[in-house]
Every structure is written in C-alpha cells, then in structure tokens.
Length: 281
Image (tube, rainbow, N blue to C red):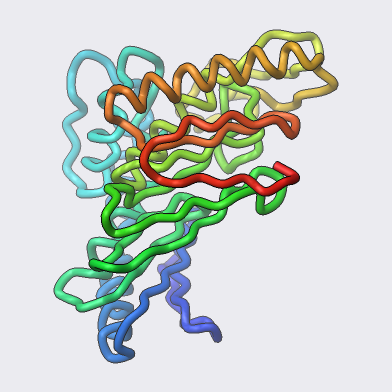
C-alpha cells in the first residue's frame, strides 16, 4: 500500500493512502498553485506510516497526563482533544482534522496563494489571504446550508461528526458541523457535541464499538447504530443537549459556531461567522 497522487480534470489534487483520502485545491497564479501541489504531494508520503507508529497511544483515552507523542499530526491531535479531557475522548477524535491541518501547512508554506483548502472526508482546513473568502456547504442529508468564511474571521477549520459519518458516535445526531480556528479543533469539538446530542429511547439501537470494529478506540462503549421513529419531544431534548454543549464550547473559546441536525430539525449556535440554512433545513 503506497501513497497515490493524481491531478483531477477540474484542477484539484487527489491524495490517497489507505484510509486517508484528500481533495486539495489552491487558487492563485498557476505556477504558485503547481508548486503548492508539489509541496503537498511530497509531504503526504509518510503521513500515514508515522501515524501508525503511534497508533496504540492515539487510541487511548486522554486522562490527566498530556499524551507524549512524536509525530506532527499526532501532536496536533493531542492538542485538539486536550481541552475535552474531562469527558471520554481519544486523540483519534481529531485525526482527520489534524491531517488536513498538517497538509494545508505543507501546501501553503512559502507560496503566494489567494486561498486553498484540504478536505479530508469532510473535515476541512482552509487558507485565506487578505481580502479573500470561501463559502462552505453544511450537509446533513443534502446541501442544507452554507457558512461564509472570510480572512477577517479566525475560522480556518470545519468538521462534521454524527452517527452517519466515518467514525462511530455515542450520540444520535444526524450531523454536527463545527467551525473553529483549526480543522483539528473543529473535529474534536464536533465529536463532543455529537456525543452530547443524545437521548434514551427503545427506537435507538446501540452496540459496543468493539463488536463492530475490534480496533475501535471506543472499546466497550455503546455506539449508535440506528435511530428509529423517536417522538418529537425526544428529538427536541436531544437537540437541546447538543446545543448546550456547543454553547459551552463557544463560550470557552474552543469553537466559533456550530450547526446541529436531527430528523430534519436544526439548532444553530452562532458565533461570528454567518451560517445560513436552506428553506428545507
């Protein structure tokens, strides 16, 4: 298994190695864009192998002792989850965002780009030069809304978590999209908010994480595998719980904004970045 890089027909760069699958796009003078893509490709080569070397530590819950990690992506993961250590969390909660942040840093280093992003399965790291902006989609079941990111605002990361994502969730959210200073910070916070957006009801099916994936960092914890026909009051209660956690994280300065979705219902925890839902959302 080796890292693969390919230029797509629309000008984007595709990087893939095992479970890491990135879409990279940069905007600017063509020569600068090509140099940036070369830098990203060079950096990508050992991202996965270095992470695997520390996988045992990365899968352990964060406790009172700060995780001692060596690789740059692993250190980003530890930094992102450390503020959430009072609850159950492992550095793996920030892996996709941390990879996106590391790759964005490699992409833009020394380059004069107008804007750029690295999308790691929906967890996105963003670069914006002065005067630039980027409109990002908020997706639960479809394109349900947008967030307008500008150079002036501190948001440089977006991440989405929930029971329908690539990772297991302790909660029942369809999706939780978080805007934060980095993609890793957004990734960790989205995990925590999605876990908090929760309720108990016979229509909610849960199983131990290790029964679904023996290598899961969640071990024996019960993760949500299906949400059936739950009453409206349960939906509202779960959304209230998730929104309360989003508000707490915003007031602690850990996120900018969040959009929470369950069964077609939404909660918005608004910070300084404009979030707009479609009429259907």
